[in-house]
Image (cartoon, rainbow, N blue to C red; front, side, top):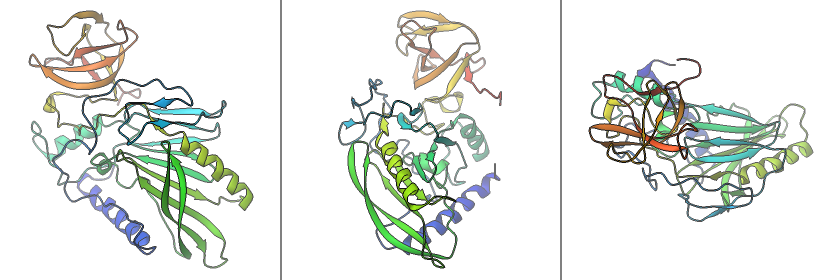
Length: 350
């Protein structure tokens, strides 16, 4: 991790360089820089903090309850393809068996970030955000010669910097281009750039990006890797387009910024993370101690935090998912701020 107060400067320098390079291609290509201060709004436009029920996800089915303009029909993936599901951001994509997934997590914070109530200083809020932010904020799905990167809406995009990070060297001839891509069930014409070596005139790589209706940014990069001829590149490009067409959202994510919830600094959790039960505690049907207590969840159980927080009865409730709960889902209190019943679970113990 870079020094905290220098992170933003480094990100801004990189984004400025990328913006300058892209602006040389014409007015159709722009890069949104990280703002010098973060808006006080704690949710991205078009999102709600009330999670929607998970939709049935069957290959080729129509996925409902999406924060997009239309319902989405996703193509059925090849039977031997793998599936990546981002639980925190609520989307799914299918990719070939030789593909790879690269997840990027919390990368820094603007030192001018508005510190929520309950935090004494920037360092305290930074350390908290670093702990609770999950991996998988910036995700790249790659096959040889083709990469798709998915970045969340603002303000979450501020916490990861450039996504993807892109270094572009010298010695290129730039040509504006645009292509039609099938993304979330819609054909979208996306502007981009193709780069050719000035020395030989040979094609090297191309990139395109667009912001979807729900605020997520999708970037597409194709590149001629060593030993790849034009025919092989076109085959990989076609496979990459099939992969992109399977991207779909299975629920509306809760993009509440860390620390801006009703719980203030008294919570260590956020939707999308896993938590360990430190002390056997009751599971309720609603975030209310007067609601039905449906079970006791045992100590050392690992649960998935699905929604929350909800603050009632001077307690902070989280909706959690576990096979130990009748029906699989219920509400549990996090603790009494002297003792915690739940804490963030990390496999590596950090």
